[in-house]
Amino acid sequence: MKNKDKFQILLKISFTSCILFLILTSLSMYFYPGGTMYNNFMSLNFDSSNNSYLHFMNFFSDLGLYRSWSGSVNFLSSILFSYSLLSVGIGIICYYFAIHFLLMKSKELIKFSKIGIFFAISSSIGFIFVGFTPSDLFLAEHMFFVNLAFRSFLIVMLIYTYLIFKSKYIPNYFSLIYFILFCLVFYYVYILISGPPLPAVALGNSDFFTPNKEALFFHVISQKIVIYGLSFSILYQIILLKKTKYIDLIE
Image (cartoon, rainbow, N blue to C red; front, top):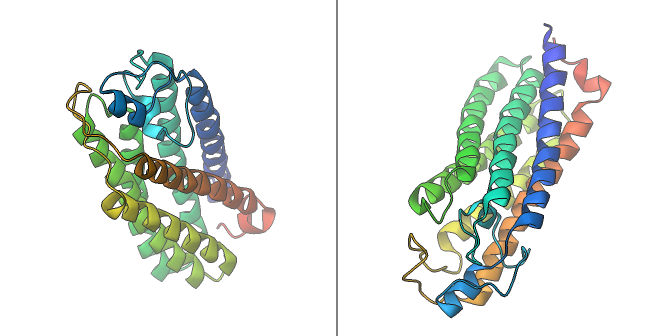
C-alpha cells in the first residue's frame, strides 16, 4: 500500500473517530441518570431531584460513573462514554501518524515528529483508560490517566506547533491553530493543578467535604471549552488535509 493511501485511510479513521466521540458523548449525556457533585455534597446523600446531565455542572467523567450522582446505576451512559474515549484514543494515534507522512521529506523534522507520536500514543492511552476507570470506583487511577492524557497532549501540541511552523509544505496558519490548541490544553492543565479547589471524592461516595458551586462551575466549563475546542479544531484540520494538494505531497 502506498503512503498516500495510508495517509488518506488514517485521516478517514481520525475523522470518523472525532464524529463518533461527539455522537457517543451526546447519547451518553442523554441517558445519564442525573445528579451533580454539588447537589450530592450539599445533601450528604444521593440527590434524585435531577434526572438529566447538566452541561454547566457535570464533568465529562460523570458520564463514566458506575453509579451517577443521583444514586442510579449508570450502565448505558458509562458504556457509551467508555467507547467514546476508546474512539478518541484511536483517532489521536491515526491523526498524528497521518501528519507524520507530511513531514517525512525533512530528516530534521521527522526526528521530532517521532517524539510527537510517542506522546500522542501516551495521551491516547490516557484518554482510553479514563473511560475504563470510573472515578467513583477507581479515583486515583482515573486522575492518573486524566493527567497522563492532558499533559502528554500538551507536549504534542508544543512539538507540532514547532514542526508545522518549520515545515515548507504545511501552511503556517496550521501552526497558529496548534498554538491556540496548546494554549487551551495548557490552560486546562493549569486549572487541574492550580484552579479553584474541588473536594476530594472518597470511594464509596461518603465522607465528603462541602464543595464550592462556583469552583465546580469553573472547572466544568473549562473542561467543556478545551474538549470541544480540540474536537472541532482537529475535525477542521482533517477536512483541510484531505485536499488533493496535501495528498500529493506524500511520497
